Image 1 (tube, rainbow, N blue to C red):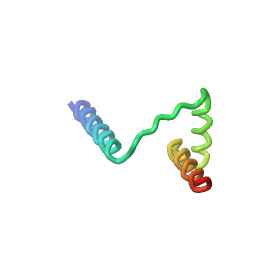
Image 2 (spheres, rainbow, N blue to C red; image 1 turned 45 degrees about the vertical axis):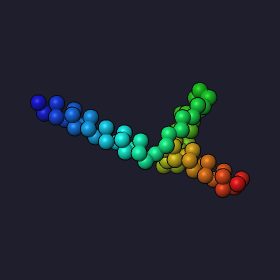
Image 3 (cartoon, rainbow, N blue to C red; image 1 turned 30 degrees about the vertical axis):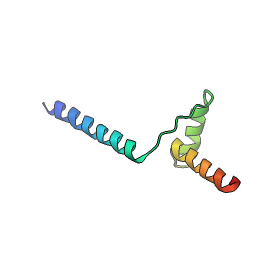
Length: 67
């Protein structure tokens, strides 16, 4: 019984997170060459970032420097 409640609680939490993300964020899918995902992930982690924050920071810096 406790397992059912725990499972249901997890489902509710995940549903809330999905709904929040859908309302607050836009999604961009990006395709990279095989093996580059791990490379980018390693770079991001070495800087205490996620892949997403690495890419958004890079794009923001590019726009700032190249108009």
